[in-house]
Length: 82
Length: 317
Image (cartoon, rainbow over all chains, first blue to last red; front, side, top):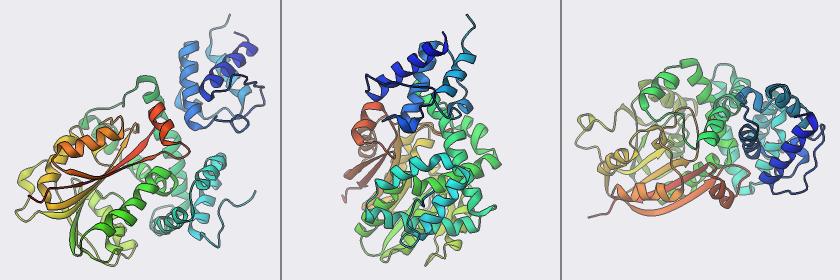
Protein backbone atom coordinates (compact mmCIF):
# COMPACT_ATOMS: atom_id res chain seq x y z
CA UNK A 1 0.00 0.00 0.00
CA UNK A 2 1.24 3.50 -0.73
CA UNK A 3 0.63 6.48 1.55
CA UNK A 4 -2.53 7.56 -0.31
CA UNK A 5 -4.02 4.09 0.03
CA UNK A 6 -3.19 3.98 3.74
CA UNK A 7 -4.78 7.40 4.25
CA UNK A 8 -7.89 6.25 2.38
CA UNK A 9 -8.12 3.16 4.59
CA UNK A 10 -7.88 5.33 7.71
CA UNK A 11 -10.62 7.61 6.33
CA UNK A 12 -12.84 4.63 5.50
CA UNK A 13 -12.49 3.05 8.96
CA UNK A 14 -12.71 6.33 10.87
CA UNK A 15 -15.74 7.30 8.79
CA UNK A 16 -17.46 4.03 9.76
CA UNK A 17 -16.64 4.56 13.44
CA UNK A 18 -17.77 8.19 13.53
CA UNK A 19 -20.75 7.74 11.18
CA UNK A 20 -19.30 10.09 8.57
CA UNK A 21 -19.60 8.74 5.03
CA UNK A 22 -17.76 11.62 3.39
CA UNK A 23 -14.75 11.90 5.64
CA UNK A 24 -11.82 13.53 3.84
CA UNK A 25 -8.41 13.41 5.51
CA UNK A 26 -5.13 15.09 4.71
CA UNK A 27 -1.76 14.52 6.34
CA UNK A 28 -2.36 17.65 8.41
CA UNK A 29 -5.75 16.56 9.79
CA UNK A 30 -5.77 16.10 13.59
CA UNK A 31 -8.31 14.48 15.89
CA UNK A 32 -9.55 17.96 16.82
CA UNK A 33 -10.60 18.49 13.19
CA UNK A 34 -12.89 15.44 12.99
CA UNK A 35 -16.24 15.30 14.74
CA UNK A 36 -16.36 12.23 16.99
CA UNK A 37 -12.64 11.40 16.85
CA UNK A 38 -12.37 11.19 20.62
CA UNK A 39 -10.14 8.94 22.74
CA UNK A 40 -12.66 6.07 22.68
CA UNK A 41 -12.99 6.15 18.91
CA UNK A 42 -9.22 6.50 18.53
CA UNK A 43 -8.75 3.15 20.29
CA UNK A 44 -11.47 1.65 18.09
CA UNK A 45 -9.74 3.04 14.99
CA UNK A 46 -6.42 1.52 16.04
CA UNK A 47 -8.00 -1.90 16.65
CA UNK A 48 -9.86 -1.68 13.32
CA UNK A 49 -6.59 -0.83 11.53
CA UNK A 50 -4.88 -3.78 13.21
CA UNK A 51 -7.60 -6.09 12.01
CA UNK A 52 -7.87 -4.70 8.47
CA UNK A 53 -4.15 -4.44 7.76
CA UNK A 54 -2.92 -7.39 9.84
CA UNK A 55 -0.56 -5.22 11.85
CA UNK A 56 -0.08 -4.66 15.57
CA UNK A 57 0.46 -1.42 17.49
CA UNK A 58 2.31 -1.13 20.78
CA UNK A 59 0.38 0.89 23.35
CA UNK A 60 3.18 3.47 23.34
CA UNK A 61 2.53 4.10 19.66
CA UNK A 62 -1.18 4.68 19.99
CA UNK A 63 -1.07 8.18 21.41
CA UNK A 64 2.07 9.27 19.57
CA UNK A 65 0.78 10.39 16.13
CA UNK A 66 -0.04 14.11 16.18
CA UNK A 67 -1.87 14.03 12.89
CA UNK A 68 -3.02 11.71 10.11
CA UNK A 69 0.32 11.99 8.31
CA UNK A 70 2.21 10.67 11.34
CA UNK A 71 -0.27 7.80 11.64
CA UNK A 72 0.19 6.99 7.94
CA UNK A 73 3.99 6.94 8.42
CA UNK A 74 3.65 4.66 11.44
CA UNK A 75 1.46 2.22 9.51
CA UNK A 76 3.74 2.32 6.48
CA UNK A 77 6.63 1.17 8.69
CA UNK A 78 4.59 -1.79 9.87
CA UNK A 79 3.41 -2.99 6.49
CA UNK A 80 5.59 -5.38 4.55
CA UNK A 81 7.43 -3.65 1.70
CA UNK A 82 5.89 -4.27 -1.70
CA UNK B 1 -3.73 30.01 26.35
CA UNK B 2 -6.91 30.74 28.33
CA UNK B 3 -7.42 29.25 31.77
CA UNK B 4 -9.60 26.18 31.88
CA UNK B 5 -11.37 26.98 35.16
CA UNK B 6 -12.39 30.23 36.84
CA UNK B 7 -9.81 30.47 39.66
CA UNK B 8 -11.98 32.78 41.74
CA UNK B 9 -15.03 30.56 41.69
CA UNK B 10 -13.24 27.20 41.67
CA UNK B 11 -9.71 27.75 42.99
CA UNK B 12 -8.91 24.11 43.67
CA UNK B 13 -10.14 22.92 40.28
CA UNK B 14 -8.15 25.68 38.61
CA UNK B 15 -4.97 24.55 40.41
CA UNK B 16 -5.50 20.89 39.60
CA UNK B 17 -6.34 21.37 35.93
CA UNK B 18 -3.38 23.75 35.47
CA UNK B 19 -1.10 21.15 37.07
CA UNK B 20 -2.41 18.49 34.68
CA UNK B 21 -2.05 20.72 31.62
CA UNK B 22 1.52 21.58 32.67
CA UNK B 23 2.52 17.94 32.26
CA UNK B 24 -0.04 17.01 29.60
CA UNK B 25 -1.03 19.95 27.36
CA UNK B 26 -2.70 17.58 24.88
CA UNK B 27 -5.33 16.80 27.54
CA UNK B 28 -6.89 20.27 27.22
CA UNK B 29 -9.65 19.30 24.79
CA UNK B 30 -10.69 16.37 26.98
CA UNK B 31 -10.74 18.53 30.10
CA UNK B 32 -12.67 21.31 28.36
CA UNK B 33 -15.46 19.04 27.14
CA UNK B 34 -15.41 17.10 30.41
CA UNK B 35 -16.01 20.18 32.57
CA UNK B 36 -18.51 21.59 30.08
CA UNK B 37 -20.69 18.57 30.95
CA UNK B 38 -20.91 19.60 34.63
CA UNK B 39 -23.63 21.88 35.96
CA UNK B 40 -22.99 24.29 38.83
CA UNK B 41 -23.98 21.72 41.45
CA UNK B 42 -21.55 19.18 40.01
CA UNK B 43 -18.82 21.81 39.74
CA UNK B 44 -19.29 22.68 43.43
CA UNK B 45 -19.02 19.01 44.33
CA UNK B 46 -15.94 18.69 42.11
CA UNK B 47 -14.38 21.70 43.83
CA UNK B 48 -15.00 20.15 47.26
CA UNK B 49 -13.39 16.86 46.20
CA UNK B 50 -10.49 18.64 44.56
CA UNK B 51 -9.79 20.64 47.72
CA UNK B 52 -9.44 17.30 49.53
CA UNK B 53 -7.19 15.91 46.79
CA UNK B 54 -4.94 18.99 46.91
CA UNK B 55 -4.48 18.59 50.66
CA UNK B 56 -3.54 14.95 50.13
CA UNK B 57 -1.19 16.07 47.35
CA UNK B 58 0.66 18.29 49.82
CA UNK B 59 1.49 15.21 51.88
CA UNK B 60 2.51 13.18 48.82
CA UNK B 61 6.11 12.88 47.67
CA UNK B 62 6.53 15.26 44.76
CA UNK B 63 3.32 17.12 45.63
CA UNK B 64 0.74 18.15 43.05
CA UNK B 65 3.08 17.91 40.02
CA UNK B 66 3.77 14.25 40.90
CA UNK B 67 0.05 13.58 41.21
CA UNK B 68 -0.62 15.21 37.83
CA UNK B 69 2.22 13.23 36.25
CA UNK B 70 0.87 10.01 37.72
CA UNK B 71 -2.60 10.82 36.40
CA UNK B 72 -1.13 11.00 32.89
CA UNK B 73 0.77 7.78 33.60
CA UNK B 74 -2.50 6.13 34.66
CA UNK B 75 -4.33 7.17 31.49
CA UNK B 76 -1.58 6.47 28.96
CA UNK B 77 0.53 3.70 30.44
CA UNK B 78 -1.87 1.77 32.66
CA UNK B 79 -5.41 2.05 31.31
CA UNK B 80 -4.74 2.50 27.58
CA UNK B 81 -2.89 -0.83 27.13
CA UNK B 82 -5.69 -2.58 29.02
CA UNK B 83 -8.29 -0.81 26.91
CA UNK B 84 -6.51 -2.04 23.78
CA UNK B 85 -6.49 -5.57 25.13
CA UNK B 86 -10.19 -5.30 25.99
CA UNK B 87 -11.12 -4.02 22.53
CA UNK B 88 -9.09 -6.77 20.86
CA UNK B 89 -10.30 -9.67 22.97
CA UNK B 90 -13.54 -8.54 24.69
CA UNK B 91 -12.05 -9.76 27.98
CA UNK B 92 -9.96 -8.47 30.86
CA UNK B 93 -6.32 -9.56 30.79
CA UNK B 94 -6.33 -11.24 34.21
CA UNK B 95 -8.91 -13.39 35.94
CA UNK B 96 -6.96 -14.77 38.92
CA UNK B 97 -6.17 -12.85 42.10
CA UNK B 98 -2.75 -14.49 42.43
CA UNK B 99 -1.77 -13.10 39.03
CA UNK B 100 -2.89 -9.60 40.05
CA UNK B 101 -0.87 -9.96 43.24
CA UNK B 102 2.24 -10.92 41.31
CA UNK B 103 1.89 -8.54 38.37
CA UNK B 104 0.32 -5.50 40.03
CA UNK B 105 -0.08 -5.35 43.82
CA UNK B 106 3.45 -6.49 44.66
CA UNK B 107 5.04 -3.72 42.54
CA UNK B 108 5.29 -0.99 45.15
CA UNK B 109 6.48 1.89 42.97
CA UNK B 110 3.94 1.06 40.26
CA UNK B 111 1.17 0.84 42.86
CA UNK B 112 2.05 4.27 44.28
CA UNK B 113 1.76 5.84 40.84
CA UNK B 114 -1.41 3.87 40.08
CA UNK B 115 -3.07 5.00 43.33
CA UNK B 116 -1.96 8.61 42.83
CA UNK B 117 -3.46 8.59 39.34
CA UNK B 118 -6.70 7.08 40.61
CA UNK B 119 -6.97 9.75 43.29
CA UNK B 120 -6.96 12.43 40.59
CA UNK B 121 -9.39 10.39 38.48
CA UNK B 122 -11.94 10.67 41.28
CA UNK B 123 -12.59 14.22 40.24
CA UNK B 124 -11.50 14.27 36.59
CA UNK B 125 -13.34 11.17 35.38
CA UNK B 126 -16.98 12.13 35.44
CA UNK B 127 -18.22 8.63 36.26
CA UNK B 128 -16.01 8.54 39.38
CA UNK B 129 -16.97 12.05 40.40
CA UNK B 130 -20.70 11.37 40.02
CA UNK B 131 -20.45 8.24 42.16
CA UNK B 132 -18.83 10.23 44.95
CA UNK B 133 -21.58 12.83 44.64
CA UNK B 134 -24.27 10.18 44.90
CA UNK B 135 -22.57 8.87 48.03
CA UNK B 136 -22.23 12.30 49.65
CA UNK B 137 -25.52 13.86 48.58
CA UNK B 138 -27.93 10.91 48.39
CA UNK B 139 -26.74 7.83 50.27
CA UNK B 140 -25.28 9.38 53.44
CA UNK B 141 -28.16 11.83 54.03
CA UNK B 142 -30.61 8.94 53.63
CA UNK B 143 -29.17 6.97 56.55
CA UNK B 144 -30.94 7.04 59.89
CA UNK B 145 -29.53 9.13 62.74
CA UNK B 146 -26.63 7.38 64.45
CA UNK B 147 -26.23 4.70 61.76
CA UNK B 148 -23.02 2.72 62.13
CA UNK B 149 -21.04 2.56 58.89
CA UNK B 150 -18.45 0.08 57.63
CA UNK B 151 -16.37 0.71 54.53
CA UNK B 152 -14.51 -2.27 53.09
CA UNK B 153 -11.45 -1.36 51.03
CA UNK B 154 -11.42 2.38 51.76
CA UNK B 155 -8.31 3.05 49.63
CA UNK B 156 -7.49 6.75 49.49
CA UNK B 157 -10.05 7.47 52.24
CA UNK B 158 -12.14 10.13 50.46
CA UNK B 159 -15.41 8.29 51.07
CA UNK B 160 -14.48 7.68 54.71
CA UNK B 161 -13.77 11.37 55.09
CA UNK B 162 -17.11 12.33 53.51
CA UNK B 163 -18.83 10.04 56.03
CA UNK B 164 -16.85 11.51 58.91
CA UNK B 165 -17.90 15.01 57.84
CA UNK B 166 -21.56 14.08 57.71
CA UNK B 167 -23.50 14.87 60.90
CA UNK B 168 -25.70 12.06 62.10
CA UNK B 169 -23.50 9.17 61.04
CA UNK B 170 -22.65 6.94 64.00
CA UNK B 171 -19.50 4.92 64.53
CA UNK B 172 -17.33 4.58 61.41
CA UNK B 173 -15.28 1.43 60.74
CA UNK B 174 -12.84 0.61 57.96
CA UNK B 175 -11.66 -2.87 56.94
CA UNK B 176 -9.11 -4.01 54.43
CA UNK B 177 -7.08 -7.15 53.83
CA UNK B 178 -3.95 -5.03 53.59
CA UNK B 179 -2.45 -3.25 56.60
CA UNK B 180 -0.61 -0.90 54.19
CA UNK B 181 -3.93 0.12 52.62
CA UNK B 182 -5.42 0.77 56.05
CA UNK B 183 -2.40 2.92 56.92
CA UNK B 184 -2.99 4.95 53.75
CA UNK B 185 -6.67 5.47 54.63
CA UNK B 186 -5.80 6.41 58.21
CA UNK B 187 -3.20 8.86 56.94
CA UNK B 188 -5.78 10.48 54.64
CA UNK B 189 -8.20 11.07 57.50
CA UNK B 190 -5.41 12.70 59.49
CA UNK B 191 -4.23 14.90 56.63
CA UNK B 192 -7.79 15.93 55.79
CA UNK B 193 -8.39 16.67 59.48
CA UNK B 194 -11.63 14.75 59.41
CA UNK B 195 -13.97 15.75 62.21
CA UNK B 196 -13.54 12.29 63.69
CA UNK B 197 -11.58 9.19 62.95
CA UNK B 198 -12.61 5.66 62.08
CA UNK B 199 -11.92 2.35 63.71
CA UNK B 200 -9.47 0.48 61.44
CA UNK B 201 -9.14 -3.29 61.35
CA UNK B 202 -7.34 -5.75 59.09
CA UNK B 203 -10.04 -8.20 58.00
CA UNK B 204 -10.52 -10.60 55.13
CA UNK B 205 -14.28 -10.74 54.68
CA UNK B 206 -14.01 -14.21 53.15
CA UNK B 207 -12.52 -15.54 56.40
CA UNK B 208 -15.44 -15.97 58.79
CA UNK B 209 -13.07 -16.70 61.68
CA UNK B 210 -11.90 -13.08 61.56
CA UNK B 211 -15.38 -11.74 62.23
CA UNK B 212 -16.60 -10.80 65.69
CA UNK B 213 -20.00 -11.42 67.17
CA UNK B 214 -20.94 -7.73 67.19
CA UNK B 215 -19.87 -7.17 63.58
CA UNK B 216 -23.22 -5.85 62.38
CA UNK B 217 -23.55 -2.51 60.65
CA UNK B 218 -26.40 -0.21 59.61
CA UNK B 219 -24.58 0.78 56.44
CA UNK B 220 -21.83 -0.91 54.45
CA UNK B 221 -19.87 0.71 51.65
CA UNK B 222 -18.07 -1.23 48.94
CA UNK B 223 -16.65 1.05 46.29
CA UNK B 224 -14.62 -0.21 43.33
CA UNK B 225 -13.81 -3.50 45.07
CA UNK B 226 -15.95 -6.21 43.43
CA UNK B 227 -14.14 -5.96 40.10
CA UNK B 228 -10.89 -6.90 41.86
CA UNK B 229 -12.32 -10.19 43.12
CA UNK B 230 -12.60 -13.64 41.61
CA UNK B 231 -15.91 -14.29 43.35
CA UNK B 232 -17.92 -11.09 43.83
CA UNK B 233 -21.09 -13.04 44.68
CA UNK B 234 -19.35 -14.54 47.73
CA UNK B 235 -18.26 -11.06 48.83
CA UNK B 236 -21.82 -9.75 48.61
CA UNK B 237 -23.05 -12.75 50.54
CA UNK B 238 -20.56 -11.89 53.30
CA UNK B 239 -21.81 -8.30 53.20
CA UNK B 240 -25.36 -9.51 53.69
CA UNK B 241 -24.31 -11.30 56.88
CA UNK B 242 -22.62 -8.14 58.14
CA UNK B 243 -25.60 -5.87 57.44
CA UNK B 244 -28.04 -5.33 60.28
CA UNK B 245 -31.61 -6.28 59.26
CA UNK B 246 -33.10 -3.13 57.72
CA UNK B 247 -29.59 -1.78 57.04
CA UNK B 248 -28.27 -0.62 53.67
CA UNK B 249 -25.32 -1.24 51.38
CA UNK B 250 -23.83 1.16 48.85
CA UNK B 251 -22.13 -0.77 46.08
CA UNK B 252 -20.13 0.97 43.36
CA UNK B 253 -18.80 -1.31 40.65
CA UNK B 254 -17.64 -0.47 37.12
CA UNK B 255 -18.70 -2.37 34.01
CA UNK B 256 -16.53 -2.71 30.87
CA UNK B 257 -13.68 -1.05 32.73
CA UNK B 258 -10.35 -2.67 31.86
CA UNK B 259 -7.50 -2.16 34.34
CA UNK B 260 -4.47 -4.33 35.14
CA UNK B 261 -5.98 -5.59 38.41
CA UNK B 262 -9.62 -5.91 37.32
CA UNK B 263 -10.60 -9.57 37.29
CA UNK B 264 -14.39 -9.65 37.28
CA UNK B 265 -15.88 -8.36 34.04
CA UNK B 266 -19.31 -6.92 34.58
CA UNK B 267 -21.06 -6.34 31.23
CA UNK B 268 -23.85 -3.97 32.26
CA UNK B 269 -25.80 -2.41 35.10
CA UNK B 270 -28.44 -5.15 35.10
CA UNK B 271 -25.76 -7.65 36.06
CA UNK B 272 -24.73 -5.40 38.98
CA UNK B 273 -28.30 -5.13 40.20
CA UNK B 274 -28.77 -8.89 39.89
CA UNK B 275 -25.62 -9.56 41.92
CA UNK B 276 -26.87 -7.41 44.78
CA UNK B 277 -30.37 -8.90 44.63
CA UNK B 278 -29.07 -12.46 44.48
CA UNK B 279 -27.11 -11.87 47.70
CA UNK B 280 -30.46 -11.34 49.46
CA UNK B 281 -30.76 -7.56 49.38
CA UNK B 282 -33.77 -5.61 48.16
CA UNK B 283 -32.59 -3.16 45.53
CA UNK B 284 -33.56 0.33 46.68
CA UNK B 285 -31.86 2.26 43.92
CA UNK B 286 -29.69 1.54 40.90
CA UNK B 287 -27.98 4.31 38.95
CA UNK B 288 -25.49 4.22 36.10
CA UNK B 289 -22.84 6.82 35.32
CA UNK B 290 -21.10 6.59 31.93
CA UNK B 291 -17.50 7.62 31.38
CA UNK B 292 -16.76 11.26 30.52
CA UNK B 293 -17.95 12.45 27.13
CA UNK B 294 -20.19 9.47 26.50
CA UNK B 295 -23.97 9.17 26.73
CA UNK B 296 -25.52 6.21 28.49
CA UNK B 297 -26.96 5.01 25.18
CA UNK B 298 -23.55 5.07 23.52
CA UNK B 299 -21.94 3.34 26.51
CA UNK B 300 -24.51 0.54 26.22
CA UNK B 301 -24.19 0.25 22.46
CA UNK B 302 -20.39 0.19 22.42
CA UNK B 303 -19.68 -1.58 25.74
CA UNK B 304 -17.90 1.47 27.20
CA UNK B 305 -17.08 2.04 30.85
CA UNK B 306 -19.94 2.86 33.20
CA UNK B 307 -20.03 2.89 36.98
CA UNK B 308 -23.01 1.13 38.51
CA UNK B 309 -24.13 2.31 41.93
CA UNK B 310 -26.58 -0.02 43.61
CA UNK B 311 -28.15 0.70 46.98
CA UNK B 312 -29.42 -2.47 48.63
CA UNK B 313 -31.39 -3.02 51.80
CA UNK B 314 -31.32 -6.13 53.92
CA UNK B 315 -34.95 -7.04 54.65
CA UNK B 316 -35.92 -6.25 58.23
CA UNK B 317 -37.27 -9.77 58.81
